[in-house]
Image (spheres, helix red, strand yellow):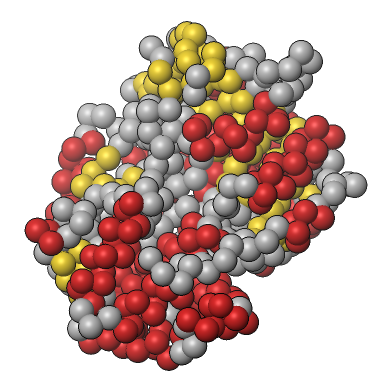
Length: 493
């Protein structure tokens, strides 16, 4: 679930958020009325001939009247001679990710499926080319509730006349996807989603069960599980795995023999004396602050991205804990991470607000958070109080936001979750067989929320292709999952 903790100002944590792919394409609920125009043109995507287009849909899918939204999509036709009628429909992470923007990163991963099937990328309403909604970042603490309130009101005022947040939920977006697929002449489809994309795919399957041939969920969580309330516990377990692996690795342990003590010292240090870099000294050009919340968010992000990024944690902890000048150490680390292609963002995905405030899987309630002993527990308790306040200011979605209790389905479902995922560990899929008797959960040892390219990506892609081709989890050869070597620990920057 690529649903990250809100940052109210530019903290060090947002610097290591994964860069969103933009500019990938060069190209010109209840169904809404059939008169809505469909526009499709030829275009070029990653050097390949494709079709790009838009479909105008009703913002209010309950009535079908009022403002229209242009939903953007890209179709990458099957490359083989024998094209199957069921396309693969990709759901982006977030909430707030752009499916079209993900094409450069996802096309290699989906290349095997593309041989016999079209790939369909549809930007969710309020994202990418489908009426992107953006507001300046809100203050991240409740130390000044009036500032938060003014920020939310300013955001809502800026959207007035352009968007009504009551209609920007996973369920309404699923209705858009169904309408686009119908307009394009597709019947049953194969759903593919990771992180929040796995959530959005489940919502689509729940609302349009007859349209789903197969469903692939990567690093996902069941709709019935309060994902964010489990973050501290899952993140602590992921961190413990990394530190334990370092301790058992002769090279890592040799360079960082006192890592546990250094981690404790670092946490105490930033709690007592936060590190602040003014904008003029910051590699990002914006002020950076490393306090307890910033450290917790930064560690979580590294754990989340991939096993390779998580492998940097022993080096990062040691560097910050032993540095004579933590300010200089922070600046150096940020520069190194930026050189690796990681960037910061000062804007929120606005559609995350109605989704986070209205949908049961996204609830975050003070006093209900698991993992009281986690390094990030205090941070998430503060986040829970923040969200509780902000959600009183966000317009409440109506019936269009509801998708009901998850119902059993015979659809074949493939789930892959990594044991070192700090957000969506395998336990979050417990009970999946009660819902999908034809489903199968595969465990990826040592893998994080995101995946590394190379052998791991090839292993996953082969499993997913075999599953979609046969529409069955039976006789899937998943042996390669345990054969992928985990990345080595870097010991210097």
